[in-house]
Length: 385
Image 1 (tube, rainbow, N blue to C red):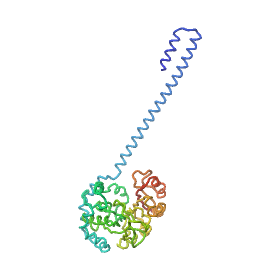
Image 2: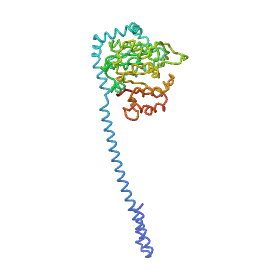
Image 3: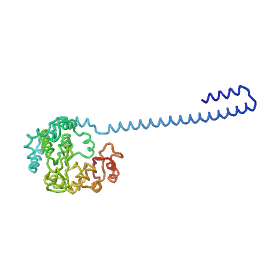
Image 4: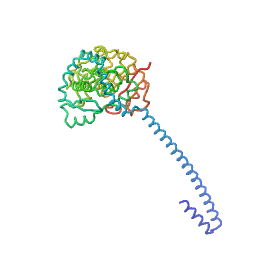
């Protein structure tokens, strides 16, 4: 377009019009030439700036990709955990056969009537459960008759050992004794002892079918004395509570409204009373996992002695909607955590902000849980003196 304009001007000048007209057109040509020079200069400047921006963007992208590669290398490998678990199964079974484990198993069984019954009821499991082998371990999975065969098959296809969850908490969750409150069928407890993360794991599971599968899994994998399963709900009282059975094996929850339908009475203890009942040395406990479907505030209400132990890290499920369903305000749970711990890690891999944060950041950091329906996460909390 610009060359055509200049061409027309030059043609008019070549036509040798009047002197005044020639001067006018020469002035217009000079003005147009100056404007074109300005645009060329601006274009050159913009092009240079665009190239610089592209170079900076490439540098940032390269830096981010390098950081991601470093992060991947620094993250515990799920594949390596899987390989380690499979290779350590024979070692775990030898540990379970030693005198210390046998003595621990005998003492635990003597104090748990439910465990004694589970040890003699394994023959009835096939009618209500399905057997799978996953990474060298035997698993009995609940298959209640209330669910369709297709739904059960879908559930079985999803079964896997939670290596990612295990690796996320390994910063603090190693050594000593573990307490697994809401243990389900042992998908967290059994791999942890096989990997050698803990000397033993005490498990509490209130649902009868889950519990029978848990006890069967301990027996089938020959881990007696390393995983110690008890059938009870951990709550704020010693006696009994009502359990509402959900559609999925992991959705059963204690209900604190006595008028709720479809609830079954189950034995309950406080966490402190349960430890006292089994004569557990609290100074040997290093990790507590709470997955109680909204009853976390009630569990903490009966755990004053355990909360005094500075060496214990706690993995706590946080689901505001479940807390409210259990009659608790999420703010109450946050206040308990802030009163007893100094730091936390949100185990949600997609959470924003630093991985390790001071406990004072807990409330704003978990605000995202209120923006999505039925959102939940696990937080790892601990005390740094």
